[in-house]
Image (tube, helix red, strand yellow):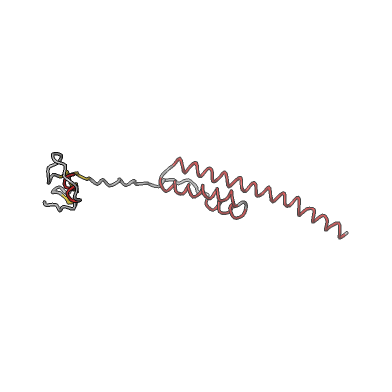
Length: 150
C-alpha cells in the first residue's frame, strides 16, 4: 500500500489502524533544513499498531426487595415542618431510590434509615413547635378574652 508524503493513516490487511510517522530526514527535507547524513535512510518510516478497546458495559440489576424510600414522608416534612431538614431527608430518599435501582443493598439500607430518622426528627420538632405555639400564644389570648368578657 502506498502512502502519501503528508503522513496519512491507513488500515492494514488485518483491519488494525496503522499510522505513518515520517523519519527525521524526510521532515527536515520538507521544511528546507539540511539532512543529517547517516542517521536515517530516505524513505524509512515507523509503523505503529493502534488497537481500540471498548469499555465493558456494567449491568446493574435492581434489588429484588427494594428498601422503602420514604419519598412522600420526606416531601410532607419538607413542605409542612422544616424546609432545610426536609430537603436533607428528600436527598436521602432520592439516593435510596438510586441505590435500589442499581442493586446497592448497603447504600440503600443506610440512606433509607437516614431518611426515616431525619423525617421522624423533623416531625417531632414540628410537633414541639406546635405545642409551644399553643401554650405561649393561643392559651394566653384565650384566657385574656375570657377575662375581658366577664
